[in-house]
Image (cartoon, rainbow, N blue to C red; front, side, top):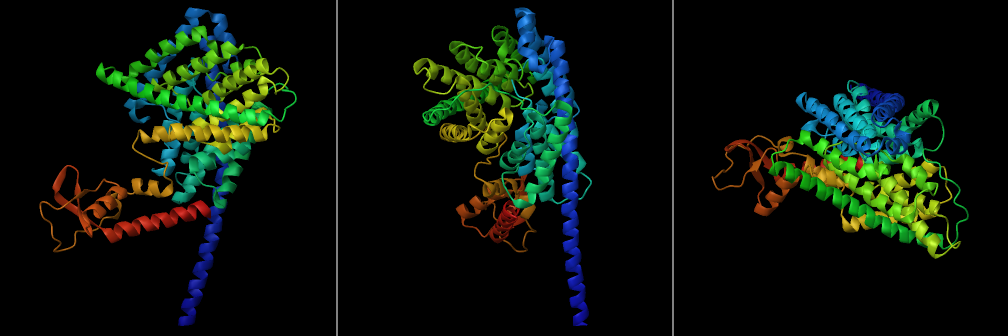
Length: 544
């Protein structure tokens, strides 16, 4: 009898191992499918931007600066205003049919939130609605990036493909990262950066079990994008000549300057968003009027500086070609920063990745021009510093130094500036952490009540709710009117703090709208056990 039971247990264990290997195989297969589907989603998104840009400025996205320049003042000013009204109409429909929460566009922060505090799924309707808002916004001249909405769309595609496959929570998070990696890979033609972006920004870990599927998705997306869009760097800088020994420490100085610029961008966007919200509440202005109002301001800036319109990659090419003077480059840093802050605070769609890269190019080129005028022939050309500034500002804003450094390499196809870029990005990121205390995405999430800066243990304390771990009220437990109570919707962190403060073994649980009716009981032992189990699960996911 004992021998038969042992045989059954051994057979069950072997079956479980085979099932686990089959599940891993399913994840890999779906990762490749997500990579292909995500790439086609990004391609369609880019074509949509081009279609709107052609209507608004008579030129595709890559020629939007030339198109706006040829239109004249009034037509260039009107494009983002009209685009603002169209965005408002889309937001109204999306809000009415519950496609977009709160009538706002979505991006990378929403993907991080879905991974950290949600079920690792994003509605396909939300993905399509957010992509539509962003396509109209960018095509009409709003100053933002296309990569954030592309990542959100890729994650939404991944979510719909894995919805009925019966995957575990960890596998769903991995597939969510696959969608993000595919979007970055297809957008920048940068498969390596796509992998590291998903690991560093979206998932926040580098476990071996998730690396393979994400790499498969990123490579599949890059292959599809190269078939349809060509295999060449998104930004091809001209030759910057010889690099001197002094250029590395000078890159560190540029990193300091870029850190200040990135911090100013984050803080100004934060303040402008707060002021716009307060202004709308004070004068009872509907959020639907914010995009047209923002369009008026963006149009005025763009009428004088058409380089701020859209993604601004044409302006980057011009800056790298040396077509802008030092004074004009400094003006573009300010104009692009203000236009982007207005765009994001007035509910246009778009991301911050491309604006960070563009502002960094302008700042780096200006820094290089100053050096060239001060020490002729003693340092590298402004192009060299423009590429370093690109990574420093972009990486500091995103809080993603590793993936941003690789994106610069893959964008330019030049690995000769490795040391200088890494030094500048590291210093700029430290400056932002010192001055702001958080990256742009962490700031966005903090506005929604989530502080993800403390790592996995902090996320656990915020996301597990009392109702998830409470039990029935023990019979005969003392319950006086003055006894502390905790609401079922409060976080585990709040519960543990209250238990410690009151030195209680347990607390009665009530609903927020009726604190006299007890619906459960939370013991200190049960709360600590739930916390410890979640920590162990998180550790396994991050290291296996």
